[in-house]
Amino acid sequence: MVDSTFTTPYLIKPFELGADIIQHSATKFLSGHGIVIGGLLVDGGHFDWEASGKFPTLTEPYEGFHNLIFTEEFGPTAFIQRARKEGLRDFGACMAPTSAFHILQGIETLSVRMNRHVDNTREIVNFLMEHPQVDRVGYPELEGHPDQSLAATLLPKGCGAVFSFDLSGGRPAGIAFVDALNVFSHLANIGDAKSLVIHPASTTHHRMDAEALAAGGIGEGTIRLSIGLEDVKDLIADLKQGLRAAGKAAGGSRS
Amino acid sequence: MMITVNEQTVYCYTNSRDIDPAKPSIVFIHGSGMDHCVWTLASRHFARHGNNVISLDLPGHGRSGGAPLATIEAMADWVIAVLDTLKIEQAALVGHSLGSLIALESAAAHASRIRAIALVGTTSPMPVSDAILDAAKANDHSAFDMLTQWGFSKRHQFGGNRSSGIWMIGNTLRLYEQSRPDVLFHDMRACNDYQSGIEQASRVTCPALLLLGAEDRLTPVRSTQALQSALTSAKVEVLPGSGHTIMVESPNAMLDALHQVL
Image (tube, rainbow over the protein chains, first blue to last red):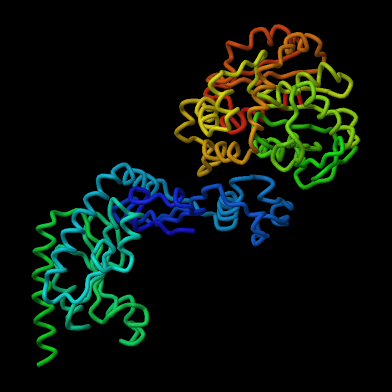
């Protein structure tokens, strides 16, 4: 089971690589604007639930559906039928038509957007790699990244537009950096048309101390970016002035 | 349930119910390379409306053991053997494509056992193109692709399943892919070789329904004239917008039409 939200089907097709079920958040790159909440569960129809012997909810009579046995009733669609029917029956899940429209409208431009996301990301990764205040950039296309060769095989069109880097200067630098940015929006989302930034140590992970953060692979100066579709020169100019603010904050904290 | 027919263990779907001798019985027969799953909606619907439902997996198909049978006549005899095993004196038969020929042959050759037939996505004769036969013989995936492409109306290539979110083309492809080697070829050859359909149709006396898809490219409506003429007891329903795979392309219209004879 693969979460392919960050790549979308444009950058990778997990079924062709042996995945059985794929999930996506449609709120992210698929729709590309961050104005709806939606998700996808996609069943490739290949998995043999009976042979595995581990899925009685699909292979044994289900009393709540008049002893229906999903694998017998539906064959290749056993899983997705149960996921859909039970979800609809028990929770009444129904997407607003406007949300569906926004997602469908977004998907129409997926290929063009993903290319631009990747192009912009590569330029920004290169810019940050050269910057003295940046201790580390984590993007799988980079020399020395532990998954570099795997990424080259699996994601030849690009490794998406979400990555993190470590600012020197720790928490104060991270906070000042985010506060100073104007083009980047301070948001916990990813995959919008606009570029997004978040400083985990002061937001999503603010209850964790330095040691706990490190155990999760996060530094106190780690910044996560989701690179959007803007003119990359504007993005880099924004990052430059953010880095200046971060430098001042880091300097100030030391003095 | 698993049953033993001609000393072979085979599967038939009964909506998780036992056969009730007091209820009328309906047997659903799938098309080439398929299994009982193509009848999910119809079999469940009729099971919930007072019938015994028996959706077959023909020998060599789906959950049934054995080798695929070579001729339509042998398949019809086997369907009657299923009725014998289940102690069902008389049943209605609903067949799709290959299954429709089996239903037709059964109604002619075993008239006393069959109370009605519904032939879905049917024609007779049912010639199969050399391109499909050759690909099926070679167990080449292109046979599945051709059948899937021509087996749905052009519109339904792009979606439109009444059960939203379920991809009818993908499901059909997976069912073909799950078929055992050579099974599709045996089925298609049996369709192609069955030359006595018109003669047999003229012998049928039970109520009959021809349920056709207006946009069917595998068994086109225009090819059914001889069958319509011979099967004098038949009502003919042509469903607009449907291709060959009527069970998922026009599910509700199919149920309405089936109620005319079931």
